[in-house]
Length: 294
Image (cartoon, rainbow, N blue to C red; front, top):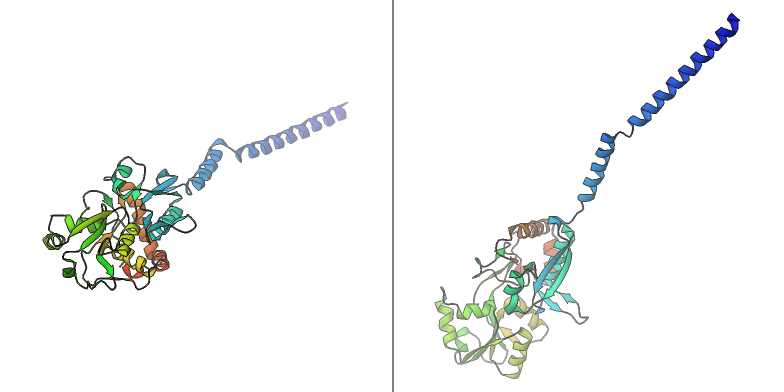
């Protein structure tokens, strides 16, 4: 009887030890997925996800540009909007996780488009000089002067030869400002006073049509655009050596929008440092005009 009782006691002890081992195993398993550790893991997953989120939480970046201003922005033969400034904007968007929205605008309506936030910026051969206090600007990235284009056989070789001539200029352009702005501009105002007429046109394609037909004798325009136009028009036109005005291009944001300006500026600085900016400029034949990073 005592022997049987001892066997029962032994069996009970073995079962108790087994239960204790199972409880220890269960406790260990629970500790591997405690709420604190699960939250930490979730936090790590969230951090990894947000590291690829778009800069400033933006998903799109809308650029306002003149679609008839090559090589900075225009519509190619395939109907695509292309150009130096649009290529820069594409790279900026790629690096910030934004989708680029290309928004062609009427140049004389650009302020309305910007103020109403239809566009995020004006980026299309946009001159800083004379507009310093009207927009929040990036630093200058291209040096671009205003020049005169005339027919090669016109006999016009200096600015003085424009006396009595009809000169075309794009509406609301830097060239127009250079010839009409009364602030610290006596020399150019005196020059414009000698013209027979200063004619405003909506775009430079119209200006060249007028020059070709003889309706105007010269065009006042940006040198970068002038060089591009002349490359496609052969030897029929020339650029006068004397410059109308010196200027620089920047990206213009709504006044006070420093946050978005800073994001774009920092990206452009990175592009200048790693050589991407110069590569894009070279692709568009504008490498000699680059001032960013120099």
